[in-house]
Length: 104
Image (cartoon, rainbow, N blue to C red; front, side):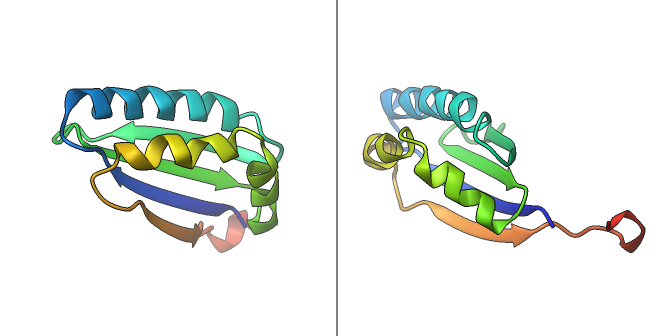
C-alpha cells in the first residue's frame, strides 16, 4: 500500500522568505524524487495565498521512508526551511486507499 506524507507550510509574509522557500522546495523535489522507493515528491503553492505551500511525498511503503531520511540532503533541509516559516510545519501521514479490484 502506498505510504503518503502531506506537509503544509506557511512562509513568513516577506517576499524573500516566500521566494527562498519556493526555490528550496523545487530543489528538494528534484533531489528527493530520485530516492529509492519514492513514487513521487510533489511541491505546490496555493493559488490564493502565496505564503501557503504543500508537499506530497509518496513512497512504496512506510519502510521506504528510510531512503529519504538517509539522503544527505535531508540534513540540510530543515535548518534552511524552518527559519523561513511563519509557524511549524503540519505533517500528516496516510495510506492511500485502493479499490479492492486494484489490490495485488
